[in-house]
Image (cartoon, rainbow, N blue to C red):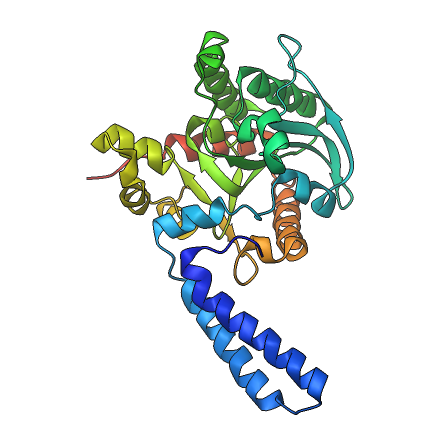
Length: 317
């Protein structure tokens, strides 16, 4: 790995020592098996200890890890027969959102997701995953198409926030987000959403209103990015760490609050360590819930979805 987070340094040193010990054992024919077993066990214990007690800010760092799998990494590992669709039929094609027909196992679905891009050039082309109004209108157009053909919708969320630029506002960013949220409460097909990285603000909600909302262990989901929250509350973006720890943006926090329905466990040490295992676990969770949702009468499904979101933020005194 090229990128090492501060809290991972001790673990990486242990893993490097283990690799060197294993290589030396093979090279010199010396039996270090007992040492290797003991160090390997200690390494795994330390790994579980570190990653099961991450702070809010450390979780933000994991969700933004440069090697973390993004949508374009996961599509070929989870789906087959993907046919990408383009454009909102009004302005153009927002490449921050990838969408189209796909199959997951034997089930046809409409896949919609945020894509940050790989490398500087691709990141710029895709605006770092920050969608514009045309992206949300493209997503809604295809969600309506899914409804027409009776296809479940699978949404993979990974967005810091909706694009806040003047051009996006001029083209109706708030209206596009609001319309998507409303329309998704009414769609007559099952909707499964998975937060795979960042789930920031209305930018995430615009493709995130689902019957089932899943979340990878070290992903984040919040009303605003920590930097934005810190700027609003304290007029100081440097307090982002404090904001992250207060936002309840970790998967376990959100599960306890009833905002998400299930946590999809990442491989030991994070999704960036094993793309295939991460994809396999996401795929298993999606298929399980698609099968359950398809058994429900559509009227009951939509009503349950509406009730679910209507009850959020309501407290009994």
